[in-house]
Image 1: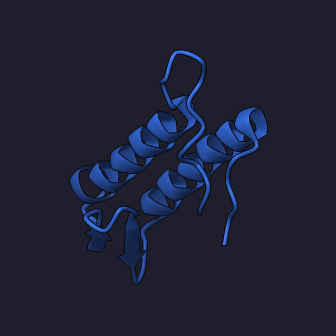
Image 2: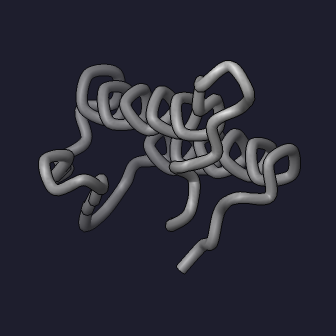
Length: 83
């Protein structure tokens, strides 16, 4: 996913980036803390990469909910390129 940053409004707040970042942090925390999933998350490179091998049904549901959330953000701001 690219392109969600750099869309600050007239007030200087980049709502799309903040929303995607919040949803992604929540996903990482929920996968590990709520579902006990074994994930690898790299957030130090200016982008976030989350990797896993097998997810439980709960983990899959969390990822699906995250995707719905970022898709809604993209519908509003037309700023995300999914890869």
